[in-house]
Image (cartoon, rainbow, N blue to C red; front, side, top):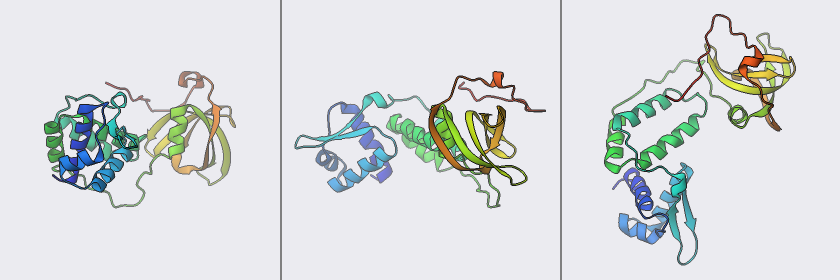
Length: 234
């Protein structure tokens, strides 16, 4: 059994007996590897977001927290590969790292035959990477956190002429434009809605100050000749 298959098998094994524990020695004997290999496997799974906890001591072992995991899912191989392709094409999008963690959890929750089919199918899909300069950069994690936590954000901002101003804003929306990702805010310096390009932001600080209730409609956001489409589930 290769390492990838063993990692998925360990998750399913722990899921099947949860909340009971499985010791490293039991897992090592089951998959014919050393206990040190199992410990490395468990660490890799934990780092990827799988909710495995360890109970130390003579009767200790590993268990999967079912409250934080998904039951077996009815995703087809094609559906899971479609998600993987979408993530690969959107590495600069908001919460891209969270998306990859979610996909790993989905694969871990799929029945093993379906997960194996997905792993085989994804190996037959490729993307040509762009090599030219000027590729859009990702969104700074602090900007993502400000939108997610609804907290006030501070940063230095360089305008088209290179002049830098200090801004304290209430971030409301992450927005993809022709120039890359932007954040729609209520700017306290201008006392008005403003859109800032993330590639022009510097010295970003996430404050502890919660944002007041404010909606896009109340901010009178002006996007001439553009129609704003908000992302939705379904």
